[in-house]
Length: 254
Image (cartoon, rainbow, N blue to C red; front, side, top):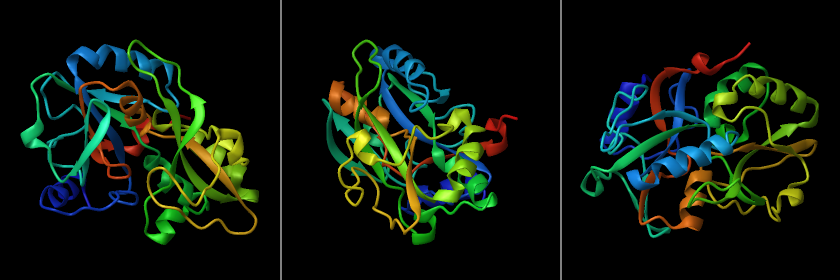
């Protein structure tokens, strides 16, 4: 499925996690904040590039960017709405909530390197199970910036022990979409006490001989909204991404 066809399907009611959609095309997390908070968020992202790698930024009030030739108000499968840091609604579209001062940030997504993992023989369990990737708040804090501070959020994929080095090597070549893992094994070192209870997404099976591997996650900006409490924010529902018009290969480094 091409990005325009996927966006049309989402716009007309298809509501699914986007992992595995539009193979070869880059997916992105969305966070839209009032212009008064845009500089703080840009600085927050610069200070925390492993969890918040910025791919593109809109002009205030614009609902598209140079890499997303669609409508950011309608063309994602699901959105989250925040007021004073509180999650207040999940919506199919947010046209009626749009504001002329909103600045949209598209943040790199680890779904982008999943095709490369599969091609290298590394299994991706949530794709096998047809579920959303599990995501967890950690006990590690991001570097703050201005009004914004947040715990680090990570995504997890169970990897056979003999393929962990391959997974690290493959994903390290995509630094703009989280890059190499931040942590391997020992979830308790991240403050994660139960892998069967993710904060976002779905739990996945971890089989004997597999190791939990953790990558930076683009839900971290939503954790910043929840902790820092700006008056208003819009975001993608975790796992329900913006499918861009840019090829994954644009973010592959030698």
